[in-house]
Length: 81
Image (cartoon, rainbow, N blue to C red; front, side):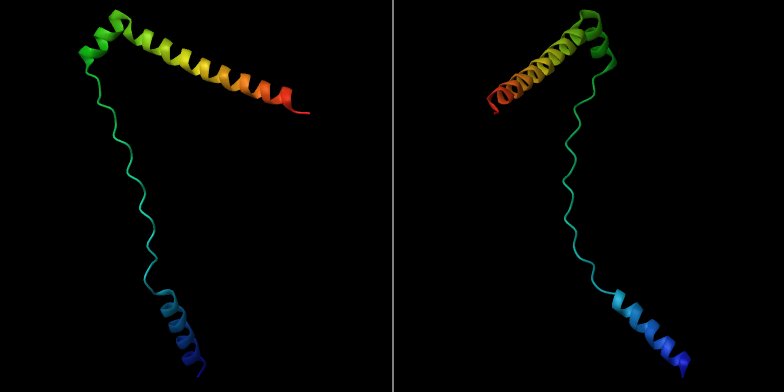
């Protein structure tokens, strides 16, 4: 009789776990990758200095953004009691 009880409780536990899985939301697809530059294009940009100029412009924009944020934080701290 005890074997019958064990089999029945195991069967109940197995069946209780079986069911339709809940639908998980689908992840957003990754953004498309920018087109890869060819070796010739990279060489031309390297020789003409375009790469350095582009890096300088990006760095300059980052510095301006950080500076503006710090100025705003400074103004907020002056107004605080």
